[in-house]
Image (cartoon, rainbow, N blue to C red; front, side, top):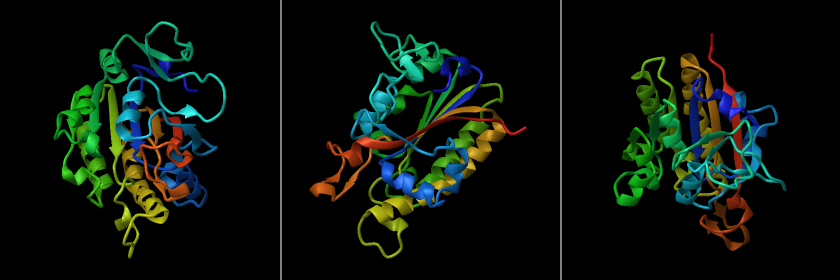
Length: 268
C-alpha cells in the first residue's frame, strides 16, 4: 500500500474508473500485450484482483468516494489509502489519508486540491437529479453525449477535455482529476468490426481502444507533476455466464475487478 497520507499536498491525484471492465478481460489483454500504455504504468505484477463494493456504477462510486475502493480478493483486514473519520474504523493506518469530511473529494478540497470530474456513463450525465449527485462533489464537472457510451471515440474526447482542464490551472495548484471511462460499458460492439451485438470479444476490443487515449493522458500528466494514481473498474458485467447478462447482480464476473494503485513520477 502506498503512503497516501505522506503524498497528500505534494502530489496531484488521478482517479480513473474503467466502467464495467472485467478482471479476466483486463488480465487477458495485459498478458497478450494488447494494452501497452496501461502496462507501462501498472505495478510489475500487473492488475490486482479485487472485490468491488458495488455491483453497478452508482453504488460502486458512492463507496469509492467514501474511501472504500475495491478490496483485495483475499481474506484479512486490508488497510485503505483514503478514509473518512468515524469511530471504530479497523482499516485505517498511519499511511491512510483520513479526512473530516462527508466524502474524500471534499476532504481533498479542504487540503487545497482543485477537483475535476470528467463524466462518462449515465450516472454522471447531469441531466437528472440523480445524474447530478456524483458530479456535484467536484469543483468542475463535465458531461456531454460525445463523452458517453454511444460515442465510439468517447475516450479520445474525455482525454482531450481532461487535458484542457488541467492546462487551465497554474502549475502550483494541486489537482484531483477523475475520469469515468465509458467506452467499455455497453454498447461496445462498434469496437469489433462486423459485430452485431456485444460480446466478451467486443468488451476486450473496447479496452484495447481505451488504452490508446489513456496513454496520451498519462504521458501529458507526467509532464506536469507527479501523481498518485488509482486505476480500477467499478464492476464487471456478464455475457451469459450461468445464464446471467449485465450487472447489478451477484456473480463473480461482476464482483471481481482489476485494480492498480501507483505513483506516476514527473518527467524531468
